Each structure stands twice: as structure tokens, then as C-alpha cells.
Image (tube, rainbow, N blue to C red; front, side, top):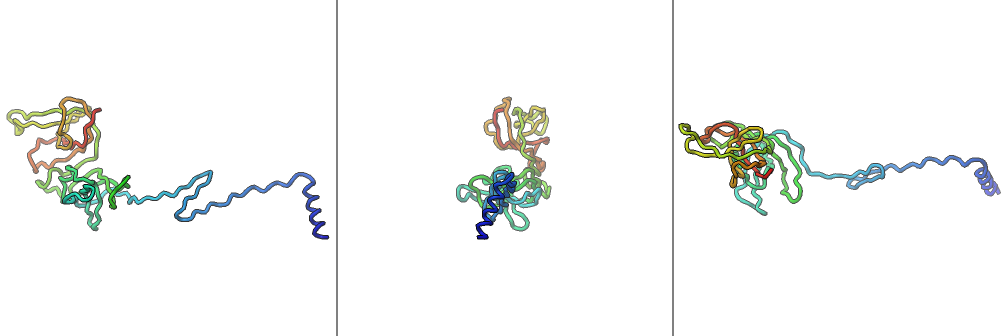
Length: 227
């Protein structure tokens, strides 16, 4: 009997007056389990995994080049650190890097995560490079600057009579702003004189004792495109 009356009493109370305020819905708190992704309507959260090594501003290392190509024609250029680590800077023995093979250098740049298929090694992109010892006659350059994109024209120069360069000819690149660079090498097989082009290159600091030079700024040409 008490149970029935209690039930009637509750119904009677609910039927009188305004309905009681409904409690505000409480959303369950999202709990992230390691190795899973948690998403909510308000702020999706996605776990991102990366193997990228920490950024390094400047390091000292020895430039090493693999003796011959390996699988998939990989012939790496490496920075060999004092602690024995080897960081790859190129998958092919690029000629401008060959000029520093076996030398201790200081480089600036950063590590990065390559896209697609890549070898299992720390990858480092060189911004600038400078030899640690400036002993002359060892290599063609003392340093290499960052990549630059320039617009201008290639011009063929000829040594003036009575000078050390008499009778010799060489290419220069004259940029739109008037800056002039002697072309050291690179993508220069099919240069057209006087045609406006856009080049990607690196300014190099020549070792004047390595071979006879005319002085002034020098440019290693990496790529030539139409503007």
C-alpha cells in the first residue's frame, strides 16, 4: 500500500504547476588513449607522428661522398659529425659539393623530413657552407652561399690585351640590378648570350691560390630557366 501511494503522490506532484527545469546535459570528457585519435564536433584532434630530427642551426662536419652508386643508383653525400653520426645532404655527388670532399666544414641549415621513398638517415639541407681551415690550394672554394634566384643575361667576356687574361674567354652573368658574377660552373652547357633568363645558383668564394682567377664575385649555376 505504501508503495502505491508513494507512486500516486509523485504523479500528482508532476502534474501540478510548471515542469521542473531540466538539468543541463553534461558532455562526457574526452579521454585520449595513446595511439588513437580523438575527435569532437567542436575541435577535432588528430595525432600526428613525425620522425623529423631537431632543427640544427650550425654544425661542423667532414664532407664524405660514397665511392660508387648503390641500390637505386644512390651515391650519397654526407656530413660526418665528430660523434660518428652521418647525415645525408644529397642523393647524388653534386659537383659543387664534390669540391669540399674530405674537408672539415661549418654548415648552417636544418634537418628535414623527406617526402616519398627515402633512405633511413637524418636528412640535412645546407644553407651555407664554409671550410674550417682556409689553407690555400686545397680546393676550388672557401665557401658557398645560400641558393639565390636571379634574372639577367649571360655575357661572354674576353681578356683584354696586356692583361693576365689576354686571349682567354669566360662566361659572366649580369643580373637585372647590375650585379655581375663570373660563372664558376654548373648548368652552363647550353648558355645563350644576351637572352634574358632566370637562374638558380649559389655564390661561391673562390680560393684564389687554387688556380688562376680574375677575382670578383663568382656564381655556381644550379638551374637555368626562361623568365
